[in-house]
Length: 96
Image 1 (cartoon, rainbow, N blue to C red):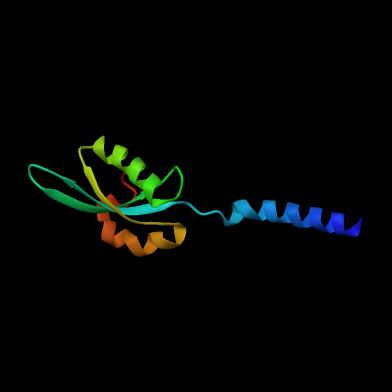
Image 2: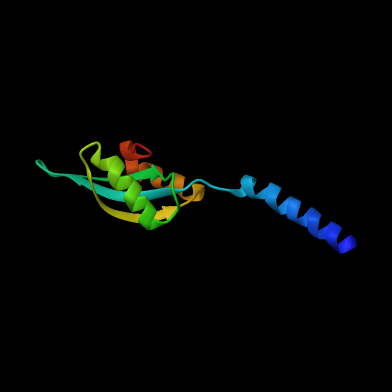
């Protein structure tokens, strides 16, 4: 009986702690426009699955709506990677 109670309490604690440790999902990427050629590096929040393939699909659509072509998703990361990329992304930091 004590083991069941202990396991139940541990399970409840585990599930209540998970949302607090959950992080956002972000991707840094390179994109271009043609005529004239313009390139940019940016950082975007990813709403779907947090993996490069999903980020590529999501970003391609967002960028295309604004006339940009996604060249490459460089990496997918959590909140811990935002600060170090902010200056490099400039005006394309969380823009798309």
